Image (cartoon, rainbow, N blue to C red):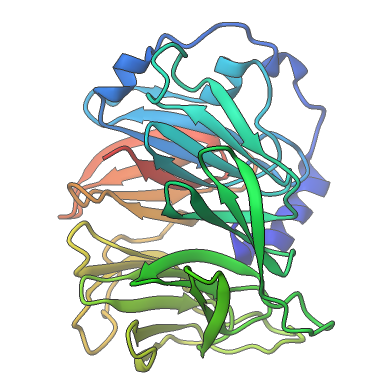
Length: 369
């Protein structure tokens, strides 16, 4: 689940949960989607976290050309629930790797790799994880899984789905769960990951030796991480919260040279702002992020923009993704964390294209091309 809303989601769960509708997971109707359909379609998968501890996470499928939307594709195809909190999805080589955070597993489903299986069909899983967050592929036989609580990054083989090792990130502190690892980007052989909860670091991992070799200090609680076309790292921090034992400060946006690992620029927000979800457009020369509304700036700008690109009025923007092909914006509105959320598809010029009603607490959109 997204970082800043963990406590709120627990409160919502305790106050609003009701009996699960078991019949929703017993629907035997198969999806009318063949693998050949999927291969030839320009589509988006949308992860819907669901309510923490409620097991009502889901995946939505959206066809960019026809605007067709199918919700809950995993459960409908496989006649079982996906689990508790879908954190992230990676599409690679005709498969979708779905990270189910609170269930401690990764489901793998068919998105074209196996012609004899239907689209969205279960093909395997990685289990025995503590609190998995994101996947980064080093090559065809090695990938990393970050984790909120494990104090290590899991190494697994995508070809066999076997766990093959661990990278310790334990700083030996008993006071906080440092270092909780999150998103990953790679420059040369080095993988960078941001550490969010009660932390202020980006870790640097040598992907040949599978060890942490360096760290970079940033602001309190970096939420996300990207690498632009000039090999500059960008991370945005949320600054913690008032009363936090780890501290509290205004959010900030950091620009760091990936080669030298030196901080080049820091953009400071106002106290009361809430920075999150830094993303890049397809050309990797424009930066987007959430601060109530959605903001856009060039990677060469010297100052933060003065006005939001997309207003956040009457919305709760919780996730943000940019299509790497056409740079359409997928702005994700969690609404109230209880009812099915909305995904707004908006052109790079700011014009509305489509609105999708998806699952509960949509988190991210992942693109097929």
